Length: 83
Image (tube, rainbow, N blue to C red; front, side, top):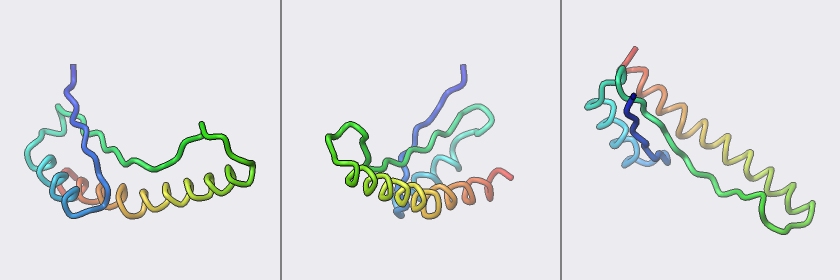
């Protein structure tokens, strides 16, 4: 059974340091590194259709910011070490 490490990332310096630590100390061949970035969004609220459309727009923006500001830099940082 492969071991896993769950690492919360938010684009901060602390998250970058934590990622560096994990990448430097873990054998990526035997341990899966799972990244988590949380966005605020829930479909389980009682909203008007207009509010839901606005929430969807905000959610898409959050996902885009997460990809650009967190996920892509993390991938680049890990690729620099492992590729």
